[in-house]
Image (tube, rainbow, N blue to C red):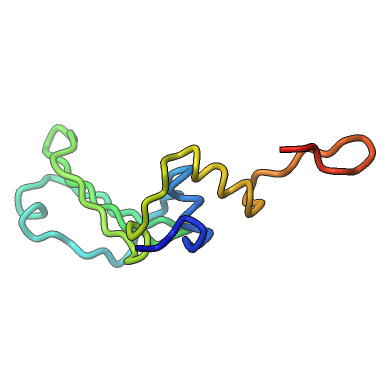
Length: 108
């Protein structure tokens, strides 16, 4: 098991903010769901590489969704979104400390 502090930056960000999806040009297709679906949508996160496959029926209602995560992505207990947000802050990922007029960081 990986600890929260050992988790890669991109995994901390995706687990806190959710994924940043883009099209996936070379997906691993599930042949069983592809056979019975009317359409499919394949996405990959540009930050962490997680893959998502959505299979739709003829009414374009979602029939099935699959995720494929990088090995280390789920190999940790995070303590929830509050702990993840705290880790983002500790690492200065997106969150910035508020500065006082004298240029010093405000106490946490």
